Amino acid sequence: MKLHVDVNTALNTVTAYGVGYVEINRQRHSGAVLVRPQGEVLAWAPASFDALAAADFESLLEQRPELVVLGTGDRQRFPHPRLTAALTAVRIGVEAMDTRAACRTYNILMSEGRKVVAALLPL
Picture 1 (tube, helix red, strand yellow):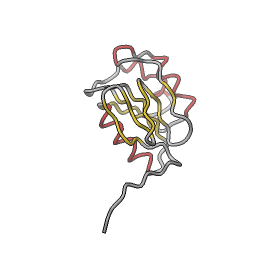
Picture 2 (cartoon, rainbow, N blue to C red):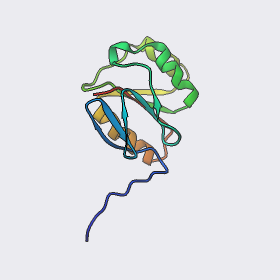
Picture 3 (cartoon, one colour):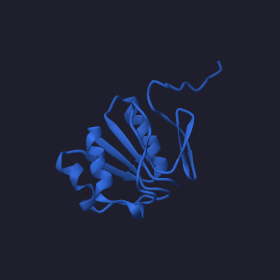
């Protein structure tokens, strides 16, 4: 039996990642991006973890996720609670992890039908 990778292009799936890019459904995106299970992959304003601002997280409210998976670059870092206050105030969870782990976690949650948004900073 020969196995083949099956990519469901009806849902936005992370298919690769590396230094300076994330690939969604085999389309490469440079810089920080917001990925939802459906719809367009959006550019995200912050260029790095140190550039994160409260407004960057407030902009995620319109997506109405139940969970935001934050990819913090090449290592796991935790944003100050004041940055994510707008999300936690309306009971939207924020999980921070390195971008590689965030890509894998997003794929699992998305495949389970969860309302997740991946906010991915470059490696």
